[in-house]
Image (cartoon, rainbow, N blue to C red; front, side):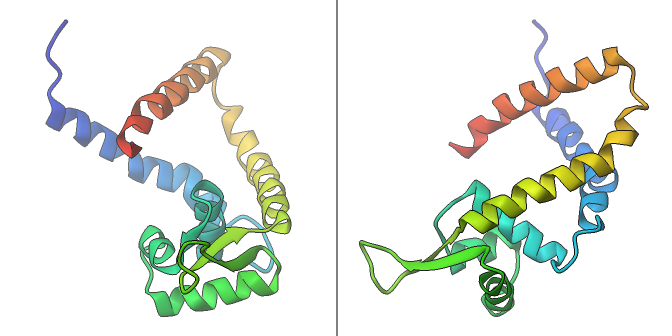
Length: 148
């Protein structure tokens, strides 16, 4: 087996970011989801992925200041998408998690996004769709090792 140039591999992976940003994520951010900003949407998805985050962790995840995050979380709290609660081990630490309404919102939002993207994927042949599906699964499985 040939030796893979790790630097070139990283560069190739990084080159996917602008492509995904343009074709997948940017359209998601501009989807017709009334009453929620793109940053609020990112916060909801971050909490769905990493449940029970504190404000510092979530602000780092979203790359926003804690002051900005407070406004974001207040808005999501008013919509009943987010719940604040105290850490059992450290009562002074406030943690955040999605409510049932927050998870239902994600389900609804996912349906809207899928419907928005669905016509674009009709451009692909069945073979291309199968290759994309297998590639996505493979990338997810391999890149998941970096989170450990």
